[in-house]
Length: 259
Figure 1 (cartoon, rainbow, N blue to C red):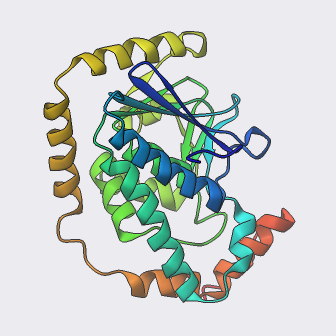
Figure 2: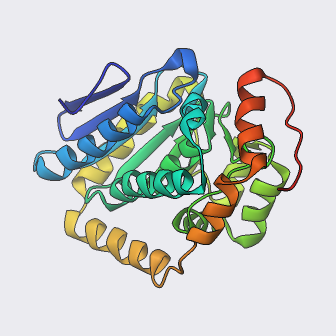
């Protein structure tokens, strides 16, 4: 099975659709959902009939509101953080490597891991209600992989990357459009029609041109990545990270100690 109840996969004509299907949890990602996403990417690349992949969240509250925080209670040391970021990179990197054009449809929140999923999608069509954020400095006190830092910096620049993470605030749809996080902003009642129109256009274009362009830009973005396990180990092994997870679960403000 390439889908679960929480992540749905469907092909309609030349377009494949992935739906993150946990609307009651703002489509927060479980390990099972991440693995299903990987399997769907494999299916898209092996299905010659698929020309475009569309990703969207169920409901109108979120695209994906990050990784389900409950899973971080299992973490005991910085090595768990390194394993997690490697696992995330395996999934995010596989989505980035999909050989067909990918379109993220964002209505509501694209936060944390959800923003990473959207960022590696080729095009990001959103409604005016969309919100983009990486609030890890306010919530868990964790960090990103070096690859995800690089992707974000290439997408929106170093100054906006720092603003996104340091201020921990949400970017509106219009701010995201200006920054490069969003490709288009479309009224909610028109977005399905716009996505259909866009997919038809992409399906009619030269697949080799798009595939080679994707891969060239991916290589340029990730060329010569430095090792950053020491940074990940320091972050996920800190008292602050465990405090952040506990505070998030208990719905209180974390008491950061800087250690």
